[in-house]
Image 1 (spheres, chains in turn yellow, red):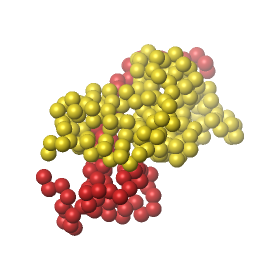
Image 2 (cartoon, rainbow over the protein chains, first blue to last red):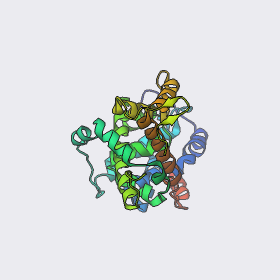
Image 3 (tube, each protein chain N blue to C red):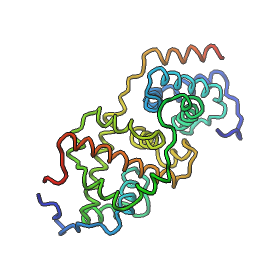
Image 4 (cartoon, one colour):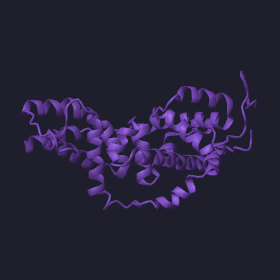
Length: 196
Length: 90
């Protein structure tokens, strides 16, 4: 958070910002928190902590800027600092290994040619949701921010504190991993790319 | 199924640079527009079968994600509990 501009809002202004710019994002915040923690109570705590921090540091929020992105950044940092440690999911991905595999042309082509639009459209919410949840947290996060919440690459770079080029490449890899998962579901459902 | 024919002729069945093209198509779908992206998109979709398929597959996945993964019900008491905590620290 930028500490450069320290302007003080009055109590009335603070309440106004909180009610009209922060609270309307509670649905998205909870959905994000739940998909990070996979636990209702942890998600509630994470959202609550985020809103308390947002209130405490409200003077570093600049009115007119993107409140949702500002809140998501706080939530993401709280998750990394407090919740990731205690969560049971594997925390780190070996990016080098994943990068080597998922950045090759053959992988790009094979996954796409094996998975078909009609198979995806026939999937139930649970299958899509499980496929998303099965991704390592860093890959899951970029898909959530981009596809579920509609953040731009630039906003994602700020939320995640990574360069925009990393946003692009991580998203591409995340999408390949997701498609691979969906492909295995499609095969279970009886879809086979070889049969036309 | 007539896969590789459209009004302007035939789509090529192999893409010359799959990784580059697919990443570009994904960026366009994400709204991360680059120079002349509309023309590039039109050109790729009409001339290249793998690009055409990839674009529509990516589009379908995005729609499914958006429709099926954003409906997590927020616990009813959460907003009230947040407001109460804020009152306490004021």
